[in-house]
Image 1: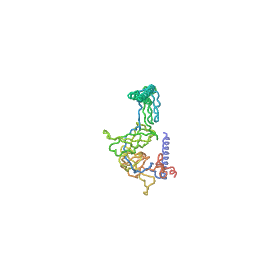
Image 2: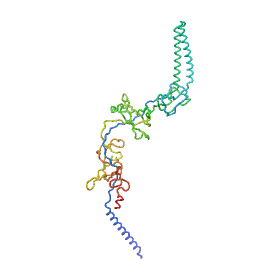
Image 3: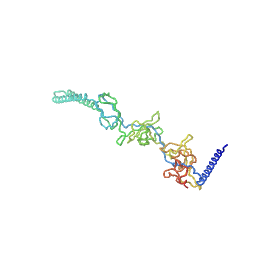
Length: 400
């Protein structure tokens, strides 16, 4: 029986064992030369819990309304001959908008003028006849009344002709046109909506009407400033606050809602404001108080509660603080209202405490944290801020 296959296997096993033992001792030697492995570390922006004055605000839904609004409706029926505006156009005060057919009125006017001339001549003859005692004063008075009646008829027809031309009573923006040349329009039929100009320095601004609860009426008075925020996603209105001044209040409180209708004026108004839009109106509630605030991004939300990572200074072997090095400690907090990019903390933190803001999502209880704020992005001793390689030796250390 041949034994060379068994011998070959034994030789291979012996070779692999020898190679493994040599590699093991080589690794142990390298680890002994390099020292103990470095503790894992993350980078985060370090901020302090701030204490600042805060004015509580109450919010209400407001509706924008033009300062002046008019519906174009003719007083007299007739056929339109000219429409001198387009939908959405801007017009000046006194500009003609619609003209009606006035040929019948103009013919009646010529006839009325002829009757005035005849009545005037008759009256003058009666004046002379009375002076010559050839006619009575009664006949003169009748002739005078006829003349004045004819003159009044002329004025009436002129007024009718004037009403057949509709002009803009003020500088305004027109809505959608609902009439066309050749169309017969009844008296009072709607032709278009006319609203005063809102935006720009020459605009009249825009009103915002909102309801104030009866228990806050004393805190919102005429002349007071309020802030408006849009409730729609408009490119030129995002994160924009507009100031308005309260100009008037209703004389009585609504008995159903127990609120008082209040009106504020925005002037000049931004271009995105249009009558009929809804906005959020913010007005003061109570007195200013001192509160603790932190960045919204520093808050970690979970089913078991809101929390932040408080950063305690890391100590060296001598008990001294390491510059830019911290130890993360999870702490549960109670939040209040949000103020822009910051949120009020009502319980769990003290003023001046260090917490992790940007980058806090990478942290866990007890982990070592390097300050990744601007100007200290590299961390102490040239440690990387974050990403691949965090917590491993740098190239310079590997070359030692």
